[in-house]
Image 1 (cartoon, rainbow, N blue to C red):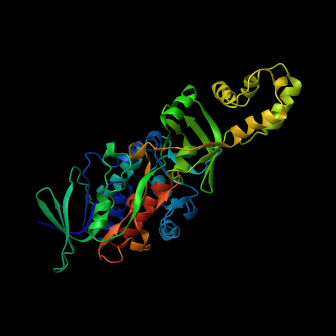
Image 2 (cartoon, one colour; image 1 turned 30 degrees about the vertical axis):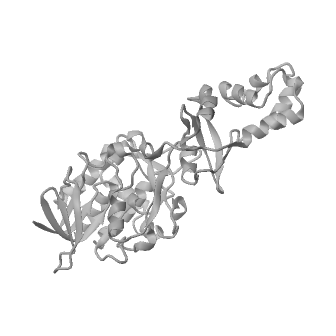
Image 3 (cartoon, rainbow, N blue to C red; image 1 turned 90 degrees about the horizontal axis):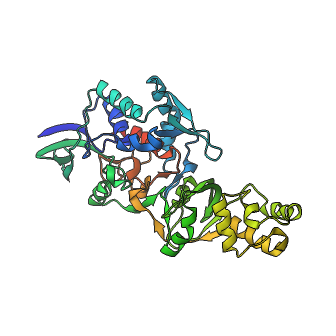
Length: 399
């Protein structure tokens, strides 16, 4: 039987940050994870370069039933604080040059450097994560200072503070589970229904077959749903639609909702087509449209609009119909690719159950929830890692 001050379940971004901060306060810490490798989500993020934060990380970039909940943590441990740590470890980084989504910061070399940085900080404080150590049982005690007993293998560990940093269900192939939600429910905490977010959207078989000729093509669009719009790249795939614009809007989309997509957001297409009709009356309409879109996209939508022949044959009304189709394409996804490819989990432990200052459960003393397991979900672009650092840091000041 082992006694410890703070037991942290989940050795990802939030868990490692919490362990660091709790140990700095002189607390004895055990950091557990059921996975064989530490920080896998960090390693695979950002195409292997880890989009570790965003210059613009603020509450307006997060979704939650309580949009104000994240403000305290983000202010007390900001993106600038994490950048300072990165620079202390001499990790070179860059801001992604993206005309639609500036502010995203990446490692110049490898995401592994972020994992190594956190591990070196932990090792310096004599904290050594225990991997392949699944927790099979958690129970609460009221005897003395022993608030919780957790079972790991054949060993019981007593702790006065228990931190759940197990993340959501996203990307199960690297070990993601709903463990944290089960713990919250065990202790009577409300859960905002989890769902995949930052995920490609899928469509019925007929629609997929219709889009198949365009698979692999991408273009800049504005996609809108439920009052939210994003301007970024969209990718046609053999399963449906993906790309940053679609991933972003997926967090706002719900089953049955229609997406509106403007495929030429920076072009007055109607005027461009009218001018082409005047200047090149014998040109085929799909060839003219190919000056603005990839040819296979142009051909597809000309066919969809029932347009063929030369520009001279097309009235303003028919050109307007084509423009409306391309700038207000209305489509209804049937679902998403699910947790298999979702970058994050939307929903989670209800923020009304937690202190925004400490991340402690209001009605269970000594129990903390941090990171993705909480109902705070960032946009694409490093915001979710910043929430992990910030919430982990806050819990580490009190656990």
